[in-house]
Structure formats: C-alpha cells, structure tokens
Image 1 (cartoon, rainbow, N blue to C red):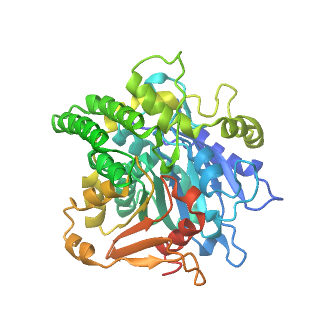
Image 2 (image 1 turned 90 degrees about the vertical axis):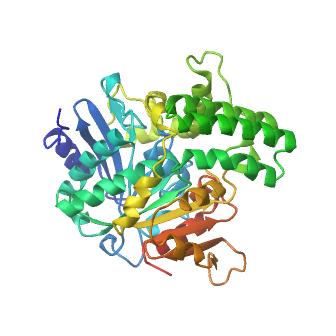
Length: 441
C-alpha cells in the first residue's frame, strides 16, 4: 500500500502545532505529528535558531537523529545533548541553537512520543525507516516553506548514523527529482554504527591498549568477535545480533563493567528478573535504549513536557514502545552500510564522520577501519592528509580534537569524549557544527 502523504490530518497537526507555540519565550519552537503510514505516527519538535546577531534565515537547519534504535531525539538528544535546556530545565551554554535551527524527530515510529496503533507496523529494517522519514520530510518541507532554501544537514549519533546514511541518500535523490524541495547540504555521522563488524573486531585491541583487558580477556573477546564475524559472513544477521549481546557480556565480565559509552566510567546495568525473551537481546536493550530513559528524563518527558506539548494522546507514554522498536530491528543491527556512504560520496554529498576518543561501542579504531574499506576514488588522497589540531577557542592551549578533510569527506577525532560527544565535550561539538556547516574554518 502506498504510504499516506497525510495531507489532511498530518498537515493539520503540522500547522496546528503553531497554535501551541510559546510566543513569550525564546527560542521559538513548534511540534506536531505526521502520519507516515496508516496508524503510524511520527512526532517532531522544531526549535528555531537562537543567535543574538543572526536571524534563523541566516543559519542552517539541522535534523538530529538519535540511536538505539528506539532512543528519543526529542527527549535524549534535546535535553541531554544539544537542545536549549538540560533535563533540569536550565539553559544549556553549548546548545546548537547558537549555530542552527534544530529539528528533532522521534524515529523510527514507536520511539519517544512517536507511536503505532498496530504492533505489526514497527519498522523491521533500514529501508522501512528511510521510507517513513521520506514521508515525514516531504510533509515538513511542504508545510514549513521558510526552511526550503535554508542549508539543511542531517546530524546523527550511534544507530542514528546508520539511519542517516540511508535517509541522506534517499533525500539526495528526492531533491534531484524535485519531489522534496530543500537545500540539502550533507550529513554528519557521529559515533555511528556504519560497520558493526569493524566495531566488534576492534573492541579487544582497544580495551587491551587502554589496560582494560589482560591477555586472557583479550583472548576471550577475540574469540567471541570471531564468532560474530563468522555469522555475518554467513549472512546470519539475527545470530550475529545475539552474539553481539554475548560479546558485550564477555567484556563486562573482564573489565569489571566498563561503560560502553565512555571507558573512563563504570556501568552496572540493572537486570530485572521479570524480563522475558532473549537474554542477549534484553541485555542489549538495557544497555543501549533503556539506558537513555533514566528516571529523571522519563519523569520530565512524561510529566512537565507532556503537559507543555498538549497533543500527546492519552494512550501514548514517552518511550512506551521503545523496546518493540529495538527488537523489531534485531535482524538489521549487524548489517553494514559502508556501501551507502560510498554512494553518498560518489553523489558528491558532503559526509562528515566524528567520533569520541573514549567511546567503546563504536570506537574510533573501528570507524577508521571501515573508512579504509571505502571504494571512493579519493580515499588515498584523504588518507594522506595530515590531521590538524583543533582548539575550542583561540585562547585555549588544550587540544580538543583533530580534523582532516579532502573534497567531500571529513573526519573529527574528538578528545576526552565518549559516545555522546555533545554531552562530554559541548564546546568542541559546537565548534564542529560551525565547521561542518561552513560558519568557520
């Protein structure tokens, strides 16, 4: 069945969102739902750029895609990373609104405040995720004409980067065909799950080099990584996902529960005795989705934020369908999308890769490994570039990152940051945004 364009109900909601605009408060914001398929509803939240010297029309628009799959951009990305307020509702000094308008979307459907009326409608693969997002973006740019000519970028984190690669390619094609009118300028893949196998194979060496594994631990992690590689080579992606969960368990046992998002911290996940189903999937869900729904954020989203928004259906709880989102995508987890990045580069789309130095789940070694596999003709020239040290300000003497770029590919090595780069190094993340969107060099 052809996806509903939702020209009636969804458009009304897009426009009705203006009615709940908080005129008295900066920054200007809008929100609403788009019905991307029959009985599948996607929630979005837009903040207009809030810069003291520039109007929003002089700054780009950034779409932020969270990971998981099943983690909420409107919740976690907004209040924990880059939005105007933190989860204590205090102003964030490093909000990206200084450099751009931000569009948060709870994606795939079922994430955050997004929801489905029928459990058969959860996305099961990347193509379904991309298809839904194309419906959403078509509606958004049709209704919010003020953004059609503004430079538009897709920034992402974790599994959001995998989704961003597919969405960016499909959006590029839609713009070329004229079916979506927007000024698409590129995508940034942050600590992104582009090549799961390259990440998995680098876990042992990375932990060993940082003194978090001994010889015995390295041997155990290497053995389970090889099991994952064998499953992927046989196209047994469901099995590979289960083994991925097993591998993380092996790492936790050997490292005294290292935090997968920042190796300088410790994590002791709660295992609830009433959890049902596949134990490895349960562990993965707890580490990578429920971890993003901590009590304080959960209370904020289902309390004050829900009251503010005024359009969330009574039957919808923020994060209430996140586990189903995650589990329905299980067959897709371990599939690589290096080929999509190659297609983006071949189409001359600007691609930025950025990674936190202290991230384990998507460590920098693994990112560099899949980049070496690109078939992009300019890869050799990119690789030969010398990286350049970056500082958060001219006065600073502390190296905050390294950067190199060639043609339409760029890489940022963000120091002292884990998986959530904007949370750990907010100033450097904001500087990176300005560089990627060509506001500074």
